[in-house]
Image 1 (tube, rainbow, N blue to C red):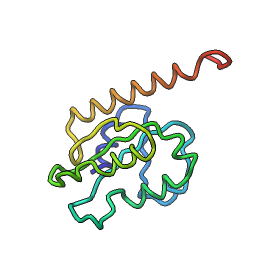
Image 2 (cartoon, rainbow, N blue to C red):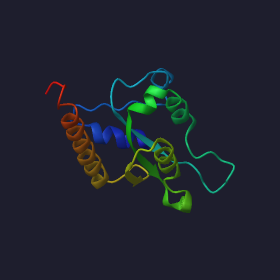
Image 3 (cartoon, one colour):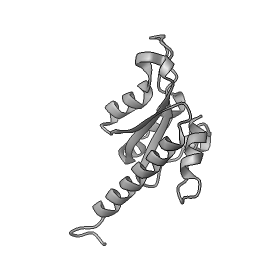
Image 4 (cartoon, helix red, strand yellow):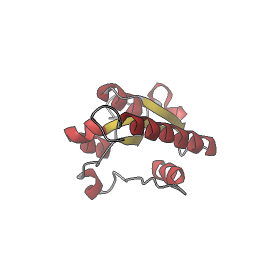
Length: 136
């Protein structure tokens, strides 16, 4: 469901989504700032790990972690207090914000909000790249 949401967010834009289910992607390092969109699978069993293993492996790299600017989470409200647990745990561990929480594959409004958030991030990162000693 996360893949479908990301495809909808990227559709008609220059954005590209990378699937951490692909080994080659997990072994790569983002070239610049990036946003994680992760599902939460925890269903109430305290022994289950809520952060998907593919996400854990990708975040093992220190450069990948340093370039992370925020997290979006997909979850199921039926998970109760575990809803959005993976996104919240990654955000807390990395010191990055949760940018958006959506249920399952999200609604068209979630897609619009994700695009707005990403556009705002792009603007902030562009502004932050110019200044004293930096080319405009």
